[in-house]
Image 1 (spheres, one colour):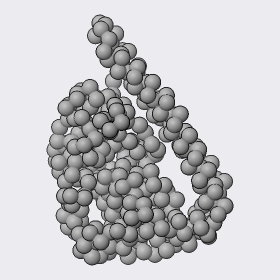
Image 2: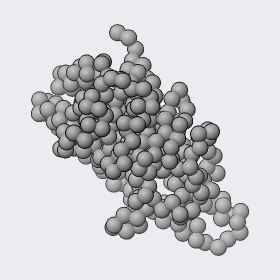
Image 3: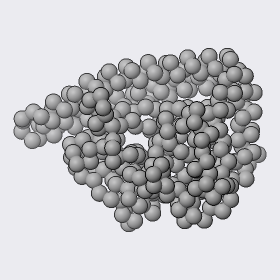
Image 4: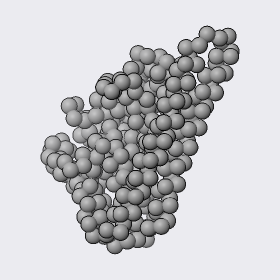
Length: 324
């Protein structure tokens, strides 16, 4: 059996609902052939993909990961129960992480308001951000531990309930030139991508991912909203992503979720996740990852540790940024 090849290229895009640019991106890459789609983030509406099918020239094949998961769990109640237990553990871990995170972010806010000599203030703020970063990393480690223990105990890829679907998915992907991953509910999407081991089934196809899809294939999934209806927002790490493209934190829907004119919030976001580069991806934005480097940016904004944001230029090299 040949070794699967990594994606030939990965294109991260902004939201597609009102200003679809997916077709243009596919055309620029010369994609001429069937495209597999993943709309599991739409949950029960997974099959309502006629607009996407039309937009991509009626050559899409929906992998139906949400439906497949339901079928697999019905056929394998033991695995379903174990999977639900794992998800419950992850929810508890997220709750406790959130409790600690809120205190660390409150402390950071108070520190930034204090009057003190600049050098002392800088040291204390750096220590505060360091504590937030350690907490984020601890939480990611906890998520990885829960997933690893589940995989070791249940070996889902070796169970008939999952293996049958993975075989069918691999057969579909064999004839495709690209995989298009839509947004939606990012936790559900990531869960289904991981359940069927989609990252391991990619064999040289181009990956196009937008909104939550872009978040799910990065190193880590960051949930964010600076001004949610229920009050002040706190960005939080949800889980590891598939890590198909490394070194960036995609931030879709910045028009409604980020206060990009608030330099302190921008700086905190950039410093917290450095050396990864935080990329605001508004509707119409896209950037291509190929051979370990990003290029061909369009309408993508880079957040910097000094609190500024600026369009990513074609000549920019998104090198890691020092955080302190």
